[in-house]
Length: 118
Image (cartoon, rainbow, N blue to C red; front, side, top):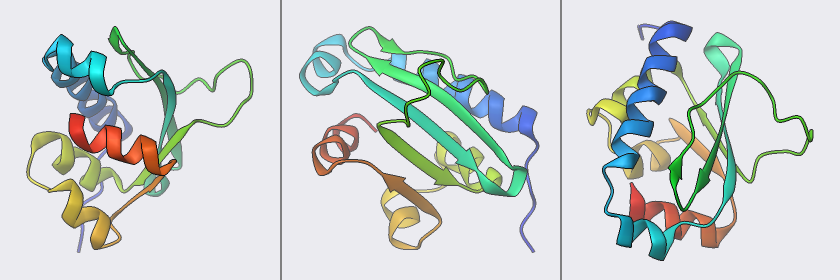
């Protein structure tokens, strides 16, 4: 049986992800980052976190939907415990995608760029 993480634990994991992204070399970010809005849906907790990726980094995630009402450019769907494991490095993103534990809805170009950054 899988253990479900809390909303607070998921929020903490996303804070950690933002910090990890800030450690990426600025030159690599400049080469591979384009401005994109992000959503991270955690279905077992019935919550969606929203963020924004840009040349300056990754903005902190919030639970407030963007005011413009537009859908996110990159949509991630992941169970709470898998989100924690991904950020902590205990779950490989490629394996999680192939195993159906993580779903990413994004353009092919965005997927290639994200792969270089993760």
